[in-house]
Image (cartoon, rainbow, N blue to C red; front, side):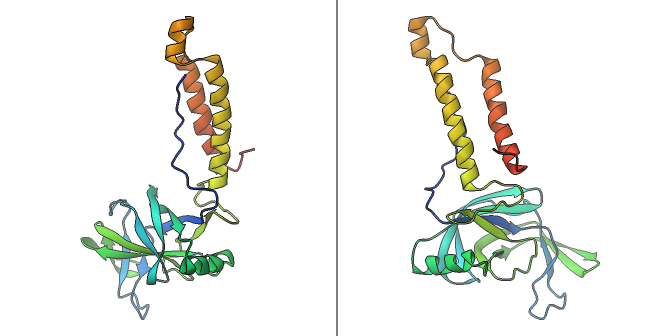
Length: 224
């Protein structure tokens, strides 16, 4: 049949990974005195989703990992990151496992913006900016920004996005189903010799619908 389901390039199960919300359109005051003199909003779609990006701890020191995936979920920026298996990475992971670090914060190079007067006062709305680094932090300025463990510990969901174990479970079921379909519908070369027809368009659509529904069910907590 030669169908290939869209399995991502998943990391080894033992790799330490996190996933979370790195940015949103919440008004954030970046002033040191928290007096509202530096209110800003990073608008969704205002930056290129280019990876990898260095992952730091509290915006200081060397990289403890790297961000390997970014995508917009509405007005929130979703990310996945790998935590390095070195001394500083392991030390940071221990803090993550103890829930001492569960916030995310981005370092930006900000470019073009518009000024609007809101309830918080004057707010700069940035529609062009670049993420230069991302940090795991104890207390993020943007209260929308947090993360959960994606792989390597007590996993949790973020914005309905399933953890690595859940994705592996779906793909394992897909492999079993595809193996059965391969037995029932041999490859094109085998079909030409046997006179059998390959998988019909209706059956392909059924498989696609099942695969997509599996992810939807996982987000809703219905995966069994």
